[in-house]
Structure formats: C-alpha cells, structure tokens
Length: 254
Image (cartoon, rainbow, N blue to C red; front, side):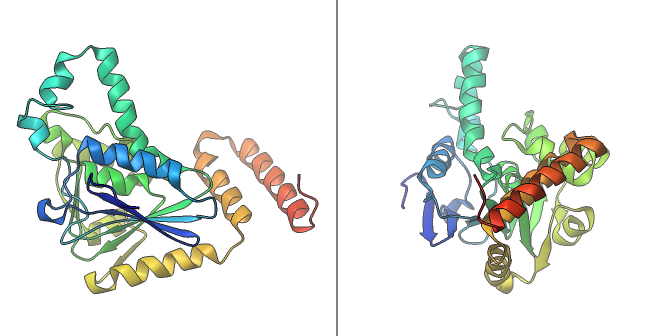
C-alpha cells in the first residue's frame, strides 16, 4: 500500500513492512506521515504477526521536518501555540497513535535502524518491541535542544530500557549515541554491519515466527506488564497464561 505522505506499507504473509520513503530529506517526519502510520495500523491483515519498520536511503529518520519549526501552516509550531491547549493535546494524541500501535499485543514490531535516528526517528525506533541497528547508527533524543519534550510515546520506553538517570541525561543533553553504546546500554537488541541490516532483521522476524502465535502473544503480555505487577501478581499471571496455553494446545480453548 503506497501513501503519498512519504510512508509505504507492504505485506507478505505474516510480515508487514512499514517504510519511511523520503530519503532525499533523510526521512524527516511530518504529521501527514504520522496520520498514514495510524491508518496502516487499521489496514493490517489479520494474519500479520511481525511488523518491520525501516527507512529508505542513508538514514532511518533524521527526526522532525524542520519546516514545522519555521513555517506557519497546519501543525506548525506557530499554529500549535495559537490553538487552545485542549486542541493541541488532542492533536498530539492523534500524532502519538501513529507510533503507539506498534506496541499492539498481537504483533511483534522490529525497527531496522541505519544512520541517523534523531528525535521523532528515535521515538519511532523506541515504539517498536525490538531494534536491530546497523553499525553506523546514531541515536539522539533531540527535542530539548529545540525547546521541546519528546511527545510521541518515547519517554516511558526509554526509561524502561536504560533507567531514569541515563534517560534523563540523554534527553536533557540531546547527545548522540552510537551503535556500540546503544547495544551496551540496552537500546539495541543486535548490532550488525550496514550491509547485513536487512538480512539480520529478516532473520529475527523469522525466528519470532517459529513459535506459535498465541504463545508469543502470551509471552509479550507477561513481559510488557511485568514492571507494573508485584511478584505474586506476576506469578499469578504466569499461571493463568500457562493454563490457557495447555487448553489451547489440547484443542480446548475458548
């Protein structure tokens, strides 16, 4: 499925690939792209189990299209300041939905990151469950340098991955993290040579698909909710999930 907004969705059996396709501007993001991403979430075939997010060209995404900073049009910084706070928050919520669907319980999402993943680009990678980085990747949460905050769903995942202190340092300084450091501090599941990025991402997707879909869904639910549960609550969640798996495997599911 092609979108004139600069994003493309391709589906091949249980794998869907979302591609940012504005390589001439390093896949700089616009609200139109976020709207398209949100629509893609509604258009996924029911048999899709893995979603790969990638960017064409030299970079995954260099972040926000800076025309929004200096312009006067729809969704520009100037307009966002002029509308009411409630309208602004509602509009941002719509933008966030282009990212948050990648956390859906029925899919595993994988970001394949090369070159720059800055600001909104970094947050798009963080929205995914897993991240494969090329060895030339550079990550940065650059919003504070523009006088802004990360607002596309990236702050909670960043704290979950690297802890509060390091997350604060990365956001407040907007410094760039290379692939080696990203792997060391938990931002990357895998770092590979640039030429191997697509192959490594496809291999990871295939490995996820090896397990039965319902088992992966249950595992994702257990792990994603673990931080908010006590040990006793997590033990109970494991028991209940395993009981459902026994019944499903025996053909006795609901």
